[in-house]
Length: 279
Image 1 (cartoon, rainbow, N blue to C red):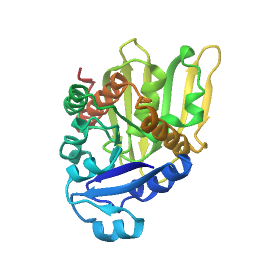
Image 2 (image 1 turned 90 degrees about the vertical axis):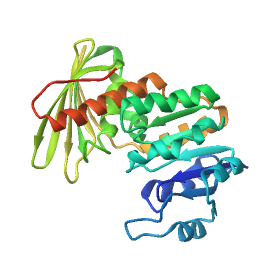
Image 3 (image 1 turned 45 degrees about the vertical axis):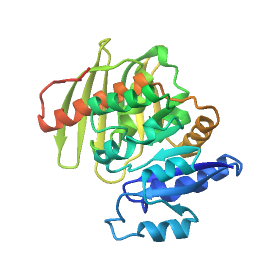
Image 4 (image 1 turned 135 degrees about the vertical axis):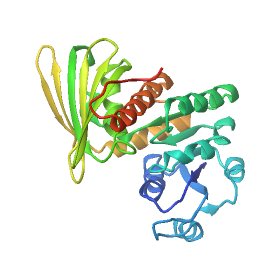
């Protein structure tokens, strides 16, 4: 049995609650989440660390080091508190064991570079990804003909825009050059110019919204409405990573995404001004 350890800010959150069963099922029962650590109990009134571990059949660990020593593979979670990743990732990324870091990978580009430097220096296989990049609708797009993209979906720029930024960067295949934000009462749109002159818009709407995309392409345009089971594809990629240690997302691309998100956050603080993406 391949044992997986969870390292989280607090455990009673949607990702931690669902990943264990998905991993078990997608691995055919050969992988299991066996140990977990959390910095705090849920601040949202959910199960505390002790209760979550008991109900999930997982061994509670008092330190991150205990999780690392006990498990074959590691998952750093804290999906809605990226500011905690610096504290949570340090030991795992030095461990030499395969590490998946949940979205958002890092709070800014400088931190993302530090994370990968730690992993490279210790020979630790690692990657991070939005589950949306594995949607079959996005992955079937012929990238060579893309001229421009208009994308939209739910959520905010801080923690949820990555679900749009990642597919856009994946499809464009180049880093962004500059970003402009147009905020409104119930959402925000980012205008993005890439280094090769192509452009994209990314709109995040408050409340319910599908993940969708219009693509200006050669020889003809295309419209995408994500309906596929992208979390199943995400979990399959995660299981494959734990088997062979080969990340499904290039580190360079993750750095492009983190740079674009950082520029988007800065643009949101300076509406209608072009903000250069960091390098």
